[in-house]
Length: 325
Image 1 (cartoon, rainbow, N blue to C red):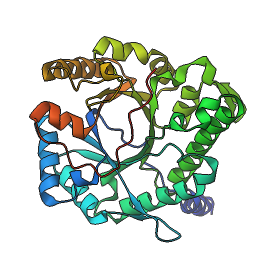
Image 2: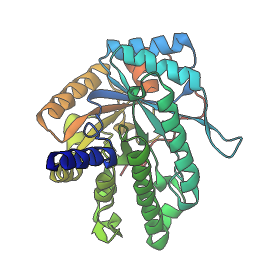
Image 3: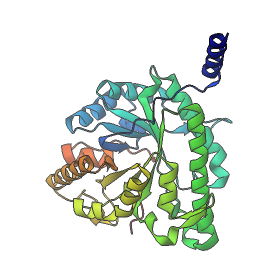
Image 4: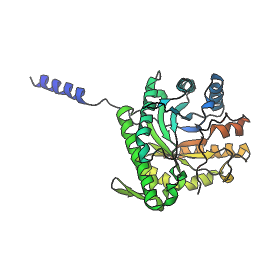
């Protein structure tokens, strides 16, 4: 009788328990790259060129911007078939892919509902792939400091930062419920670690970068500088905090031609300088557990720098360069 009761209880527990997740989402490793323009994967020839470029230069992760049509109550992924074919082609070469979204006001409170609808559309797209695990995560490149409110300081600035964090909390809840296999990440400037950007969120006062690191699986720091020493110097606070909370940061380099702040890009420097800096930073990532790898901004500049390949045709998608302090 007792054994029968025990068996019944065990069966009930199995039935009631949520399905076990096989651990945290698998994060990218090594060298990755932003891909902003749809023209970079719109045709079979463009996709083959992009993947060959990645294989040749040992790039094993792509953040690819996902664009949406807004002709109805719910967003629809544009160029869905081309994106699907890129993800499948990249996967055959062991190159992982994540969805990239970015706009300065995307995390403003009035845009939360639509941005969450976009997130759900990305999840649905991932589920439509032959293997839903082919899409690895969602990364946001949201730069609220490009808005008018950011410069007003005080209450407007605090509200912008609070809205930013609140969206990440909402996005985290959606992913945990619908797609726990997808990681959540954001691109951040290195200067969000300043005390002037500290604020209270959910009862805790921390620096802005610390709240963001709490809410995401990792951050990619826009550590745009033209030497490995400078890059490592501007990420010290984020690195220490990542070590404290057992998470990772990713470093990054700029290769695009900039109208200003040209010293932060490798565009006008010999490609050997870029290659050496990449090697040094990847070695550092292997030494430091809290450094997950290195991202290059972006395909447009890197292809022109390394292979003299004309950049993909611009389609108005690539954001302006980040504000660098």
